[in-house]
Image 1 (spheres, rainbow, N blue to C red):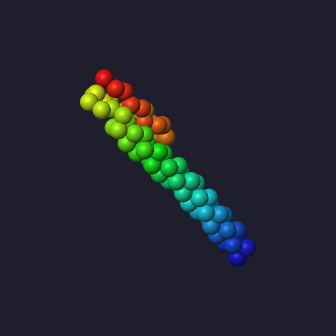
Image 2 (tube, helix red, strand yellow; image 1 turned 30 degrees about the horizontal axis):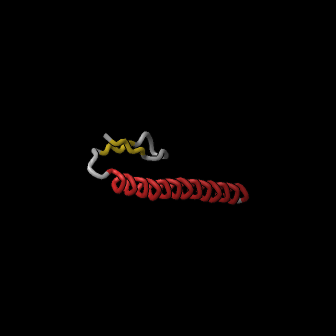
Image 3 (spheres, rainbow, N blue to C red; image 1 turned 120 degrees about the horizontal axis):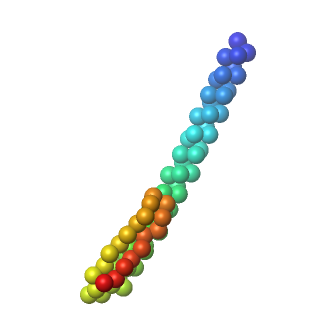
Length: 68
């Protein structure tokens, strides 16, 4: 009976840890998305008549704007 309680506790703690880590990653991705949207909006406002290229290197990277 005691072993079952220990297994259940470890399962519960492991689940809470995984869910917590997933939430932290999701919040980081969301915040990066919001920041990238603001950068893209500013790039479009500053581009005028020039051609605009927007690049992004990875999931957690910021977007970059290149004007041609």
